[in-house]
Image (cartoon, rainbow, N blue to C red; front, side):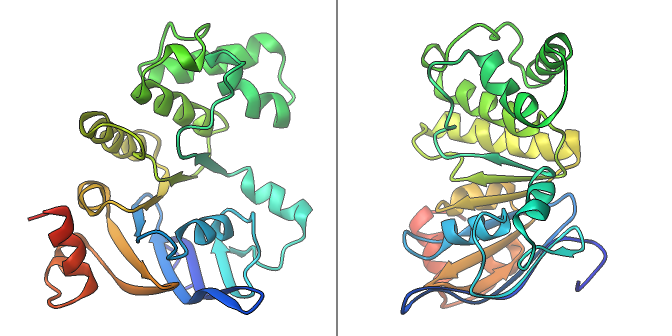
Length: 249
């Protein structure tokens, strides 16, 4: 890896589907305990890149270093072990409507850890309380606000105490005030639990609020990267177009 500080280190990632090249020579590094935001428009390869980082898709070529291990060539049995250290917050939360909050959050524990029901439910209650969701255990997703559903999705992602959390368009479909609260929640989660966060987004305004470092994807390649201050200093670039379109000063 480039540095012992790096939690995620992607090197020369290429991804092709038939003759279509979706990702081209992508490299990015997210430091441990930081928030890295991958920003880009529709069709730029963001979701494919996220799936590669999660070990859900193998790149055509390149290296995917997570916690000092290159997961790109790993067999599925080893990938499952690595995924156990990662949490995922899906777009629109992806909660199961037929299950209560308790049952939704408990799913990863039920599937992957040999716990009794009482211990499992105690873990879930503790997590819900830490995220301001105490008392919601028996409610169903349809009874919750958009912001609360996002919190439940985060509780599910955190329940196995991962060191890395991936967020797929976490503010999508939310009103501006609720979206701002989700941004605050991402930062609070980083600070409280010490996790590394990777956020896939199309919103420069969101990226400015939460990113320790940004990576701008365009046509499957990293067009620019840096801190918010570094990217603002770049003139006449795609990045400036994003800032102007988002009206970010």
